[in-house]
Amino acid sequence: MKKNIFTIIIMALSCINVILTAVVVFTMVPAMNRTNNLVSQISQMVDLELEASEKDKNAVVSVYDTEPHVFKSTTEKTITINLAAGEDGKQHYAVFDSVTITVNKKADDYKELAAIIDTRNSEVMKKISEVVRVYDYETILVNQGQLTNDCIKKMQEYFETEAITDVSIDGLIFQ
Image 1 (cartoon, rainbow, N blue to C red):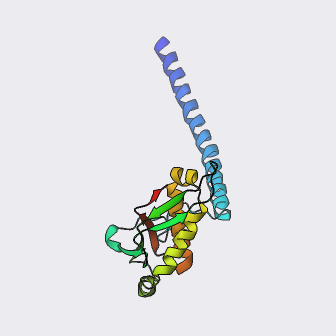
Image 2: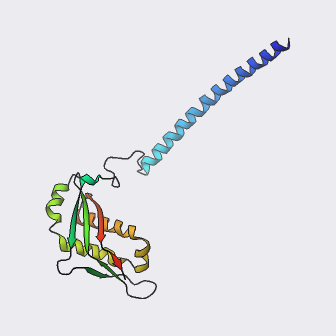
């Protein structure tokens, strides 16, 4: 008799478990779908992309798909630029040898850019000098990555292209 009662209790608990599982599934799945739809709508309104696009600005470009262009001063071996006045009140300088602009050869406007980029030596040096001149000694020591990003933005604006993927200031030292 005890075995039959335990069997009935186990059977009843199993049925209750199945019923509660079904209730949970039918109440939770629609709620999760509504939440997912809400997040999708918000991300569209804020213009966030859930998947990376092919034309992502920060996409990694293969080294085989890039072409470096080196720019040097036509009058001097090194370029010396006054940095912005810092907290210490002393005058500081940035000195560099050359600037290398890396261009994505797979970009849509690569051919137009390649035709003119090497003829713009003095303009490139002037634009890079403008960017470096804004920084003070303390800031440039701590945040050289921001300097590089600002140089990339400046070159992209000047040449009106997203094909420029990197700007390297070669031999950069600070005094």
